Length: 222
Image 1: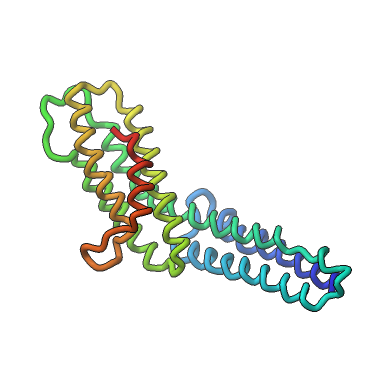
Image 2 (image 1 turned 90 degrees about the vertical axis):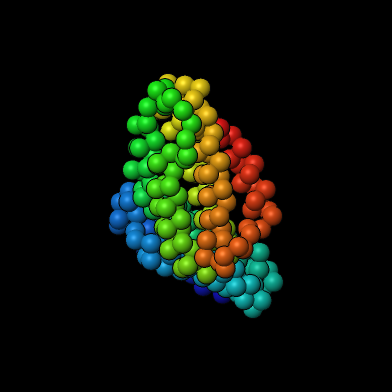
């Protein structure tokens, strides 16, 4: 039984690295796999993670007590959870790629020459359209809440950091330009908060924990 557990560990390692991780990263290069394929890999990795824990428990229940402590499939379980987490980051990257034209428009705006503050900048609506459209597509396919939440958290984190980076690349910024950015950031904050409930019934509010977390996360925006 102990040798059998080691055999399982060997081939679980190979399956995780040579099949799941290969299809997630190496096969498709930097752009990553299509959304449906990334989610298929995520779900498979999640299933394998659960199976590793169950398999370890079943072997320990049947093996002689003196060998029980040597049965260990936790490194394999951790590897599969790592693949699931990587799949979530790939999904976030899919959204980020769609947003690049909007970020480019933001950087090309003459922030030092604005004469007055108007409605939200033109790039804001297009940015939120890309974010919400792609997020809605992805969240429909994420059947486990823990991964949907992880996707939303990682996406908002990336959007906030990217926004700050683009502010730095938009210098010089006049006082009027800063006021316009302040208005834009308010619209973006509201839009990012709505991602978690984008496929829910209209008027559904995100959980209090989600709201508190992301209000704190993006307080650094202007």
